[in-house]
Length: 162
Image 1 (cartoon, rainbow, N blue to C red):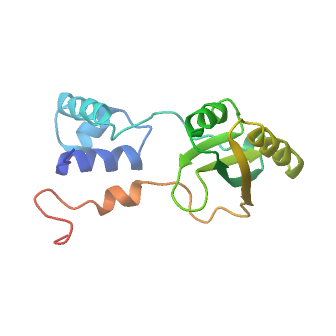
Image 2: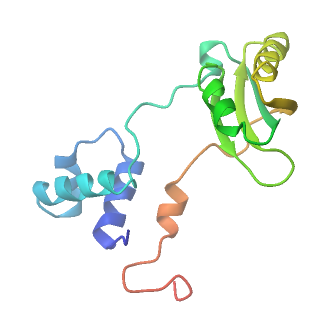
């Protein structure tokens, strides 16, 4: 999907002020509310805007341990393992990867002992041969996309020219 300057401005507005309604964004952007609504729907349908839920801190819910777990999986078992991972609440994210390992998971736990139990659950999945885990000490850069949207080139300019 190609984004024009209005799409980019709308994305910036939504990211910078997510609790403001589309009517206010339309006023700020100087366009009709219907235009903003149509752009918003188009961005949703194209998969650019993917969610509206509040971000919830697992540590505020008592899950103070964050670990990154790499799973090594037997040939042909990736889909079955991924299905099993979806049933483990402490697995908050999982990605197929290249390199050493097959799946990378972001896992939360209430303690190191709880993390060990979660890893044992992962190992119990048919197809998981072994795991490798690293515990996060401190989040240095939180998940974000606002800098990416700010860095998008203006319409009519290629990335190299921007």
